[in-house]
Structure formats: structure tokens, C-alpha cells
Image (cartoon, rainbow, N blue to C red; front, top):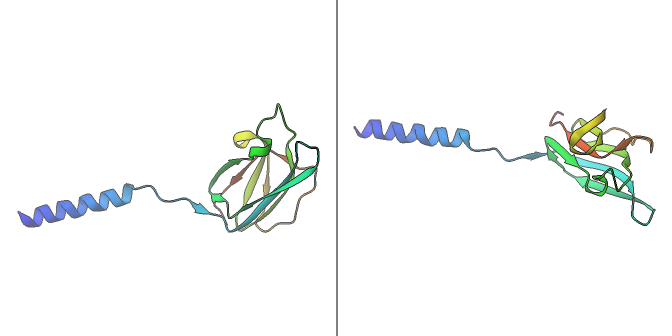
Length: 118
């Protein structure tokens, strides 16, 4: 009887460990972009080791009704990323390679999806 109880407890503990959510990982490196601030001057933001995988809506340009999109994204992380023209990773998209060159000011974005792929 004790053996069955011990085995059942061990299996229960194993099931609990397997079903626990895993912690989010992070891309290694920096993802940066520029946007026009409220005073009309260009600003830049760098996300250091951003959480991955997942979508990040850029707070400074999240509302298409009140801001211009961000521009000139630079993916200097170790992961592939997709940049989107609209919040919540919607709209047109472009894929940027890991540790790629800075893009031009013509590439606009409001959100970015870190793929988790190296």
C-alpha cells in the first residue's frame, strides 16, 4: 500500500511540474527604433534583451489616431523579428534578420514580434 501511495504522489508531483508554465525567455541584444516626440524632435528607444517570443506594441506610437508610426528599426538581437505597420502585430510586416544592419527611415512600424528563432 505504501508503494502505491509513494508512486501516486511521485506521479502527481511530476504532472504538476510538467503543467507549470515556463518562464518567458529573452532575446539577447538590443532592438531599437526612432519616433517623433511630442515636441517634433526625433527620439530613439532601445529595448534591451526584449522578452521573446511575443508581440510588443510600441507605447510611443500605439495610437494611430494621435501619433505617426515609429521608423528606422534596427534588430541587433540574436533572433529574427517581424515589424508591423499597426499595433498588436497587425498590418503589413517585414522580417529583420538577427544582428542586421539598421533600416532606413522609410520603414515604418507600430509593433514588433520577436519570433524566438535564432
